[in-house]
Length: 116
Image 1: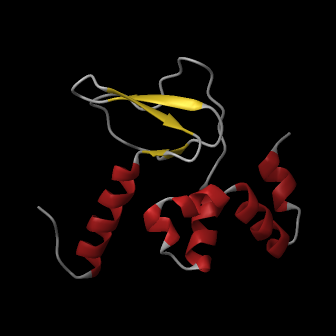
Image 2 (image 1 turned 120 degrees about the vertical axis):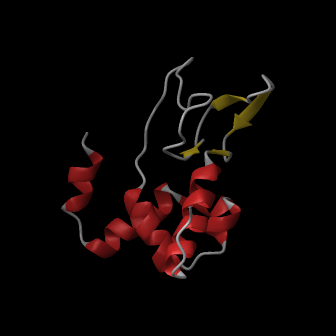
């Protein structure tokens, strides 16, 4: 079932309520828990659910972080540069660095500074 097509045919307020329910785990991330509802609604509009099978490589060591991963069901192992394996479970997040990087850089540009 193409969830996006199904959703786009619903009234906007119902879409928003469904997204709030589906992505309620977002508020467990500290920085998101501090945000106002309209901002969270905008973020939830961009979220997409994905299912990974066992032994999938989601983010690569030494690669660019281009997404955040919220573990909704199951578990994930994060292997650090030092080789230490950290188990992640339902409710955990991987890739928060991307959000922190974006917030730092967007505030620099908003303040009229350019990072070099």
